[in-house]
Image (cartoon, rainbow, N blue to C red):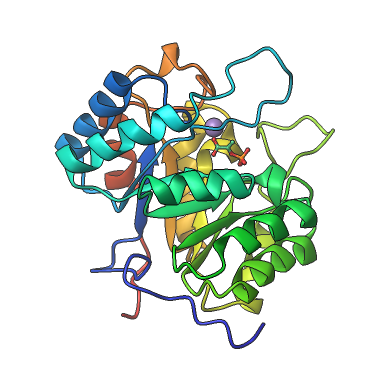
Length: 264
Ligand code: PEP
Ligand code: MN
């Protein structure tokens, strides 16, 4: 794993500014996507826009994403607002559809990283492409499993790889939705220093008021970026309503977070 060289144009920390990825938990309607992206663009510069179209829900019966239809909306958002877009993929068909609709960057969710069969299926579908991939940590605090997923994507020929830290599931009740276990993420950074490490304070915190302190902690620990769930009307969001922030609040958070001086 030592030879992984993942730094690339979209992931390089520019002008001391960490990577900022923002957008709703889920794509709901084309209007919601467009309004959210537009308001973000009006408030702050971000690196990439995110939204899930296939949503891994804990229990059946809740909103499971709009599917391929949402990828068509992405195209219009991209055309109108000129911003790279990232989406979660959880199987080979998702990869094919995302690439067919020109999604710029893919991410693998925590529920997929736990399963080597799933990660391998995604890796096989990625062979021969050079689409950048971000890999979330698995639900459980298993560093080898996280690294194994990164290795599978690397072995498929992908060189633009980033790791996303979204905290770990636990029976223990804490103020976090998913316990950060920062030491584990730092160990990944130490083992794979060329893989940008991005923090997802939204899924760690699970509530709006924790986004700023968790983001600050990540910056203090020298993370390379943040992925923050942002919705133009968070309280009405179809998934993860408690943790999404408005574009105006996103701008405040990104302006308030103090970034350590970096050596560029
Ligand atoms: C998400 O990013 O909306 C998501 C489902 O995340 P995770 O895989 O971290 O639960
Ligand atoms: Mn979410």
